[in-house]
Each structure stands twice: as structure tokens, then as C-alpha cells.
Length: 439
Ligand SMILES: *Cc1c(COP(=O)(O)O)cnc(C)c1O
Image 1: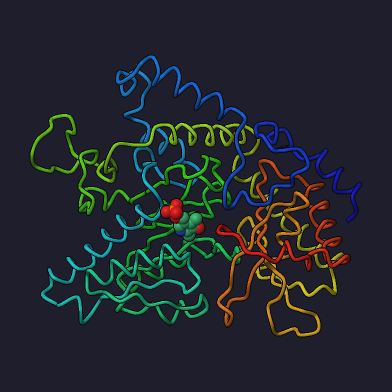
Image 2 (image 1 turned 90 degrees about the vertical axis):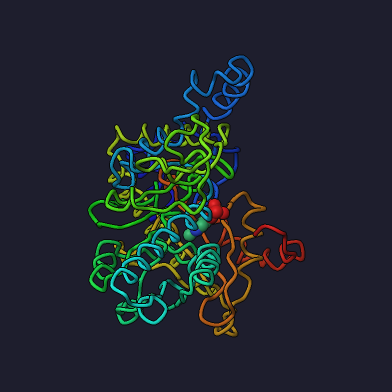
């Protein structure tokens, strides 16, 4: 593959026009849409309208007249088809961490209740929340807190240990579908079935899946799901997360954050909490309307993709982009110490590629990952770095490929920059070796 061939792939790409929906600074190749999606061009005017028109002139009437009150459910309904959820099953609200707290709490309570009902103490029997050691930290922290409160045990394993670790003691299998570090993707239907086979509930974090890979929560028969809208869904910095609950649990769920927005009649102002029917009970307090407006714009960029083949077309292009990146790094950056942390098999890969790097003279030790990413960023190739644990999980250079706005020539140019950074030892400069607060 050469530059001209990459340009030809772009010319033939049925999704190439979707890029026009985004503002991207000139000279930047943005490979971090897995962490913060690019800005939809429409967002500035749409959010300005929400400020000036809706807030500025409608004032409090806008809760009704501008559809503010329904925003969490309306956006949830727009997102639902992209994750295989039904209508009125998803809300966009709060953060992923908070939504995980709500859903894991619900799952633990369901498990406890099942065992209390048959007179068995949950402490001695079904009391394990099973997850992956390299799950995103907030998922593990939330689970640690909840397990401590409920007398449960958080058990952390490596992915290959999953089949043997799924025992009758497991109450909840809590996994992130696409691993944030490696981009490795779990088989959601088969793991959900394996969890159900031992009487466990399956809770999926879709932070790196929603808008990135095909997801069908209904077909997988999952129990709970949460995820971000500011990553592949382009909702804007800190935009509210989403939460889905299978209809079989939705009305039996006990809301640990029993705020007034989850009340059956919030404006009855009754002194006693009465949970709303359906997914609305997962809301807690007043919603951040300006941030939700950003989610609207992010989902609009997907609506445009719908007419061009939808998720199947996005997935096809995403795999072609990540395949090309892997191939070009292996061909053109050979001998620089890079390794592939992302699975080669398509069925096991999300929409990112993660590289490890070791010193070719000392091939057992992670070296240079942070500085190489900094040198690339200085050249306008924005990826990111994720720290390893020094033992099992190496430091990682992470590159997200968002088919909505990344093309094949971008991949070529990104790898060419990487090659230059390595050939010239540019990454060894002191300014690339100072750490910042946010990496
Ligand atoms: C990005 C990410 C989060 C972020 O959670 P916030 O509450 O939005 O900060 C959580 N879980 C996973 C797996 C993520 O990748």
C-alpha cells in the first residue's frame, strides 16, 4: 500500500462526505475520538441557540416549549438503535461512573434478593462481582465501593480466565465490551449466555463500543448497560452518559439515588418517593441541558451515516482503517520496537489500535511510549498514552479510528509521522519527556 492507493481508497469511500460534519483544525490528524470525539460543526450554533433562544428568551418555559424535560428519554430513543435497545429503554443522563453505580447496585440487590428469598445468606454463596483486572479504573472503583457496602467480593481476572472464573458464586459479570487500553472486544452474546448459565447477571460498559462497533443488547439478552456519549458519539466534553436496563428488570429496580427526576410524578411534589415506571426511574436530578444539546448534535452525525449504510458501513470502514494502520506500522516502522497490543482478529477488535514499545536493545522493558505520543501530538497527530502496570500490562500508545471523520490518507500520514519521529530520534527531546496532568 502506498500514498496514492490510500488516496484512491478515500475517493471510493462511500462515507467520505461525513467528515464535512465536523470541525477539525487544519493539519491535525485526530486519532483520539475514542477519548473525546471531534466537534460536530452544528454544535456551536445549536448550543448557542439553547443559550440565547431557549434559555435567554423562553426562560423557565423552555422546560416544556424547547423539550428540555424530555431530553434524557428523547436522546435515549435516538441512541437506542445503535446499541440494539428498544424504544423507551435508554436514558441519557449523569456520568458513566454514576450510571454504573446505579445499575451495579440494582444487579447486586437482585442477586441478594434471589438468595434471601430461598433462605440462603448471600455472603456465603453468590457474592462475587467478576470483572477484568484491566477494566477502566472507575468501573473497578465503583464496584469496590459497592461490594464493600453490600458484603460482596470483587474478583478481578485476565480475560482468558473468564470461562473458568464464571462459577456459581458469581452474582454479576461486569465487563467493558471493548477494552480501553488494548481495544480488545469481548464476545457479548456468548459471555452473557455463560453468565446466565451460572445464574449471574451481565452488566456491560459500552464506553468504547457505542458508535464504534455493532452492539445488539437485545439479541445478546444482556441485563444492564452503560456508556459514554463524549467518546465515539461526539457529544462534547463531559456530555452525559447513557444507561439501559432490560425490560425484565426495569420496574423491579431499586434506585439507590432516589431523586425527584426518577419519581412517578416529579411535579406533584409529594413528600414520599414513588419510583416512576420504566427507564425514567433511573434519572436522579435536574439535567444539564446545554450538555445534552451537544449529545443531540453528536447523534445527528450518526443520523447522516444511517443513510449511507449505517453501522455495517461504519464497521467495515473502521476495520479497513485499523487493518491499514497495523499493516503500515509493521511495514514502515519495523525495527523501532513496536508491538501490537490489539487483537488482529476482526471479531476481537474495537475501533482502535494500541501499540506497545520496547527498546530494541532491551526488548523486555516498556520504553518511550509517552514521549513518542507527545512527539506525534507536536506534529498534529493526536493519539494518547495509557500507563501500564509495569508487569502484565505494558505502557500503550493508543490510536482511535473514527470512520466518520478519519480517512485512509490520514492513516498513511499518521504512520509516516511516526516513522519520522523514530528515525530522527525526535521523541528523545526533553520537552516530550515531561508528564502533564492529563495524559
Ligand atoms: C471513558 C470510560 C469511563 C468514563 O467514566 P466517566 O464517569 O464518564 O468519567 C468509564 N468506563 C469506561 C470503560 C470508560 O472507557
